[in-house]
Amino acid sequence: MKMNDLKIPGKFLSSFILTQEFKRFEEFVNSCVDYRYIGVCYGEPGVGKSLAAAYYTKWREELTSENLVSDISLENSSMAKICKGVFVTVPVTNTPKTIRYEIHRRYFGYGSSVAKANGITDLEVRVKYANSFCPLVILDESDRLSFNSLEEVRNMYDYLHFGLVLIGMPGFEKRLSRYPQLFSRIGFAHQYKSLGEDEMRFVFPRIWSKMGKEYDPEYFADYEAMNTIIRITGGNFRLIDRIFSQICRIMEINKLQTVTKEVVEAARKCLLIG
Image (cartoon, rainbow, N blue to C red; front, side, top):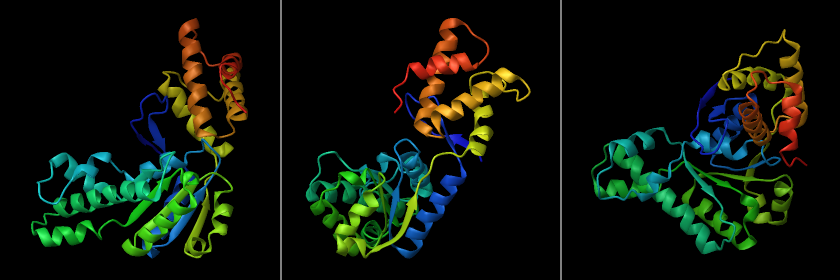
């Protein structure tokens, strides 16, 4: 398990944690790409589905602006070479036209970027790559898609032959069964789960060090504080991030040097947790 830089404004955890659950997600997405299937990923809010998808694809919106004629910058060329696919967050208000536009402009920008990054200069060849080179489209917040928008996604999938991953909340996979033409094309399903207790005990000492503290399993206050955080968060990434943000704030205000159970409980009272 490793932690890698993931620049997200306003987040205490600025690194992406490579957990066993992410490895399972990675295998699931790889299968969708290899077989050009539709995959459905579902899970409780805050477990890390969106972060996992963003980290896997390494998508950058800057690639959307690329066209077939102009030269690509060194920065965008580097992005295109490591990018594995397109990542789209479904708008709250969406129509088939909106969805087609949001997917196609990223799809075309990705293909154009990869063609130019690979040194292709012939315009006809660039056009071919731009329309066929994208291996993967991930749609986050897919619960928002209406029936007609889902049909548009299916039509684009049939026409462009990319691997497709739909990410949503629990129950989304059951809702899709009401649309037989789309449902019959789904090859894989994956439930994204929260961190297990063993993983949390492995990760938390690294978060302690991010706060400038050293976790000592032999020191009862540290041990008790960790158990309290595990109990409160249940391995939910979003809750872990929020509670550590509050712990840091409380320690800074009160000029405390040690994370204790009392500090964690005080941080818990600052949060709305269902």
